[in-house]
Image (cartoon, each protein chain N blue to C red):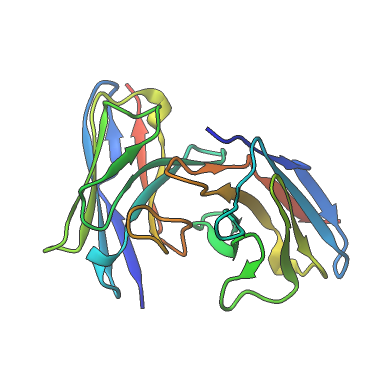
Length: 114
Length: 121
């Protein structure tokens, strides 16, 4: 199975500042036939189910603020919150969906306010 | 509006069984694969199982293979997870989820609120 590793495990950022979360896969999740990266990002707040933020590595889900952006290709990916808001405090997970299941998730990155 | 409502969780002894249900509404149920994801208390997300839109293809995590069975009933718009030979380490919130994909989901655009399964003596 593809192993997903996020860094850091946690970070604290001042309001209005940039938060950067990295995700590395143990093998490429770029499908050459369609040039798509099979990588998604989720946000999970306490007591709530995960919420889809980004899919195909960089496509923002409808309704997600544009301060959230995803980038990367192959094995290395990044989620950026360009200007952290109080409501962005949450745990963020990357997930690969390359090929047949299983999905695998990163271990999560907890984002707090400094 | 898409809604997914899980039920069937509870307290069960090790070795016991439980059947989870996920009632779906707001979309054409048979047109989409469905997925179960779990989250142990204070831990991360773990994919458990998936089923194709037709129900003919199923997929399982190694940790549950041979013990859990996923199924769906399109006449009732309901997804199931039959869990047998439960272990303490199966204790978790179980979410049903769906999104793009017919043979399997690519990513989960829609999630239920989850149902808690506690395996303890």
